[in-house]
Length: 96
Image (cartoon, rainbow, N blue to C red; front, side, top):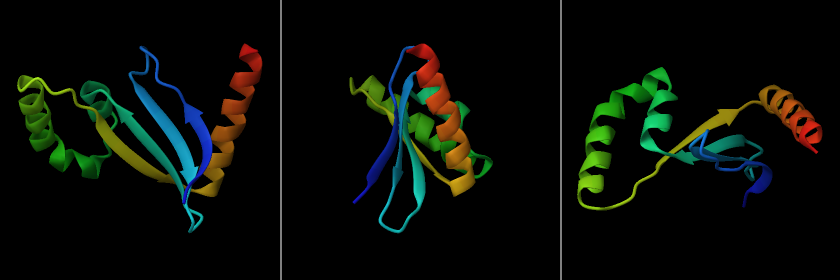
């Protein structure tokens, strides 16, 4: 069971959608899905070892006429989340 904390909607500028959730163990996770080009740019250093093979697979699927999205996640600590949530809330208020 996950508790939804935030939703960052898809738009054509970001080319990705993200949610921040808290799991039953209290871990805060940023889950993201998006276009391969955008997602590969954001890989952590240790994720780069799979980049070439994943890129090949994605293009193989695309050549077969399949649409693909890349999925990624990152665990956030409580302080990172609080800082983000504060800035995100301020941004939402300033728009409305």
